[in-house]
Length: 292
Image (cartoon, rainbow, N blue to C red; front, side):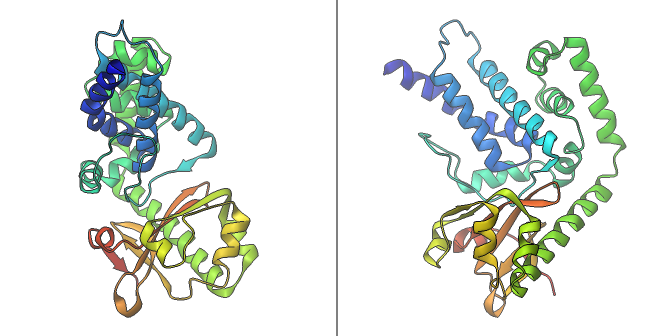
């Protein structure tokens, strides 16, 4: 027990750093939390008696988790930039408070996140670890499964691509595509077009609602396109497209006062996740711009 408590303390000392690493790689706060949590699980079941640099070991583990996720996402061309709303990390003894999460998110511009989405997984990992966290290529090499020279080339290629991209244009295109999906989803919901809703939803779509939204009648969690389409069909009549912290989403705002925010995550032009936020404090901390 003493050793586990010691490991937990060391992990907590590194949590903020690991959160930053994972967020810059994945561009999603909730996915970053999952990657960090996986890092803790691997630490808890690994004999680290021979590990001289625990911080470096944890960074490597979390980076590998992120790389696996990026490769899986790349096979589906997933667009994981999402509404930055804090979620609880299951089975952890401590987590970042919501304000700290938002500070971490704000430390990296949306434009750069979008541009990083254009990189291949190994390029993104090499670029983030070296250019943002000064990790030497000798340590990056085993993470991406390449030689140190090849890892250096990955980062260099990523650097050239990042510099060569018109970030403003990429962000505009990204937002336009997302806004069109949100608008079409709300229209199909209002008009009761069940088939149209199914077309826009990923088969494994998940809807999560915070505690305040649950008190308004929402389910805490719902999975599957059929279930989600059934829930939204004929509804969302008063919901409107909105920019939420600069990202396309939707809002229910009776009398112009936001009561429920809808955050969306997309993949291959389909909705893979919807988050319902009704907590007044969280809503108050977000910039909500309702479209006319």
